[in-house]
Image 1 (cartoon, rainbow, N blue to C red):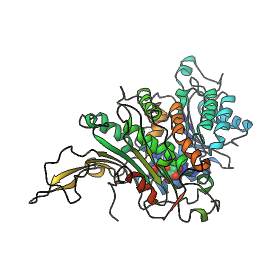
Image 2: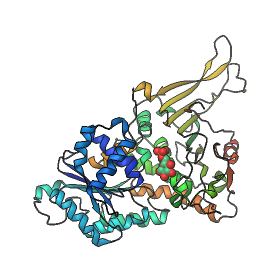
Image 3: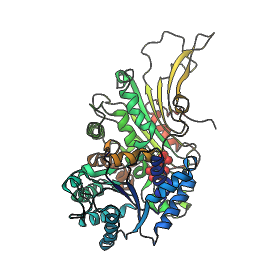
Image 4: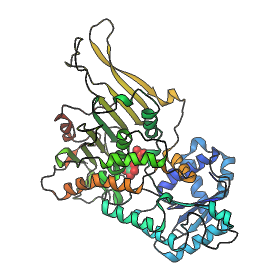
Length: 499
Ligand code: BG6
């Protein structure tokens, strides 16, 4: 981290994400002493707010979402870093106010982090308007010719842009957005966020695979039978119908979060823990995905979705998806990766279950089910973060085996009370210039290439599997179970709290 002044401009500071995640994450980093010493946080929005309104808003946000770490004296210092700047996103002339506000704060020579937490239809406007005023330079946070800017200062300062998901609506719009972004920012300045990559347990997939020797030798088609990624949510569409009904689960969850988890599981070992090496390998996996057959997909909608406020009464938006995907490379050829995600499901859980093959030869009396259970490695992303390994063990005083768990729970192993929020890590990485946990332009396009044909097939192909209804509070439609039964697999769930 360099120690020059840094300004973070949060576009959309009045919104939900800023209130729930961004402000608390910045505060948490602040009290841990991880932020640059000279930092200013500028909230950007179109409302007629003053600095005082923003400070009040931030205060409420911390009181509601950072209760455990709120501390009056720290807040008194933190609040001094906050100010507000009004910008009407599509109107270029209003960015002059922002530019002048930022220049006033730092004489125009600080580092600049622009965080876009706004509706995606405005991404292009913001990028172009920042570009037009020369606010996007990587070697000069301020505009050309700004006061007090020595050549040495210019050489060191940077500007970066963090862009929230969704990045594009499909491959075509993602490519178009990439082109616009690249016309203003170099790829090295662009941080496309997927908050799942900031989750401790998602990051730990890399440590588990590449900081140990025992997993890698069996991490392939010779030993693994199938891989399952489940991202189940109990929440329904809630108040987000305006966005969600136009997107659905494939765009909202599968294109990003599930494919990111899949690429961490399936990637080859990178040669270094750096952004290029890591992302090269992730892209290779996504590019090796075989086109998914429509018959290997299931789409569902929870009962009652169509009567939620803001949802079209005849909506065909899926709130659940399950699919079987293959990765055509030497490591994974013909091993199914099953992905599923849904809203209004029975329990909130994100988990990856890796099922191993059965022993080739049985020398013991078999279990009641007639066979050994498959060994299973479960990576519990959330909640109850941990790793479980299910093995067969002899039942004492009997001659048969039973599946038992070897378990790692984060709260025991690390005495961690609360794990840091994903945004805490990611904001810090963006400030420190480490894009490893952000999505590269080619990566985002590779992910769209996988999901686009499914979304289009569901919309236009008469032979596509029909929409299935599922009861709220269930594990999704029965068709999702049938998808696995064809290969004599079943969805496995570990990491669940007892209900
Ligand atoms: C967001 C989706 O990206 O992720 C939401 O837009 C979803 O629909 C959320 O609820 C889930 O995130 P988490 O961290 O609660 O699993």
